[in-house]
Figure 1 (cartoon, rainbow, N blue to C red):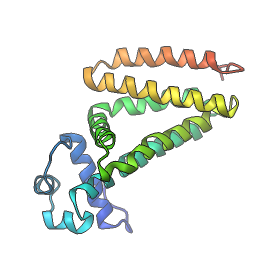
Figure 2: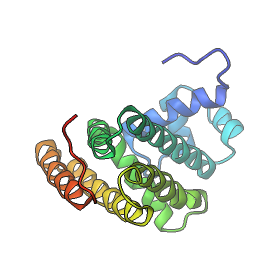
Figure 3: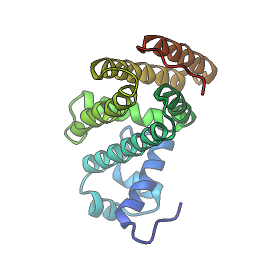
Figure 4: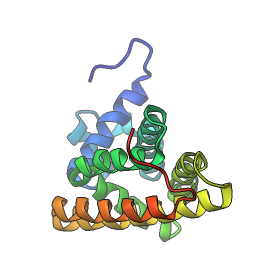
Length: 195
């Protein structure tokens, strides 16, 4: 996708980097290897990001921001947060082979307390948790909405891990359908899924 007229060169480059990491994984990729992969120089990567750690932090923020924006859009498009969650699952599952390995790989960096990934702990919990909680709060009290949001986030990540690992999308979709039925049952009062 071409850059907008006011898009900063750093942001354009970051977009290419995210795509490259999604296709190739992060692992121990050097700045030199990455530069060659995205068609720039090691010097330009250092100029825009300063270090590999800071570059990874920028990647983390970009990926999480895009996914949270997608969740927000699904929630805006329907008054039924359960339906929004189902649509969001389809979106995430479609990109699982590309983005799930990057997501989990960088999550591990946060789990190990890597300095550049520190912010990821908040981004991976608060951003999505807030979105799901706001959706469920349309139908139940705030404490219950937060519990359902946390449960939905945990189950979604688990099923995403499974589909990324096995490639069995049909089984993953079936698991999400079953979980969706459980969530509808847990809502008080239950939400009528018919329009």
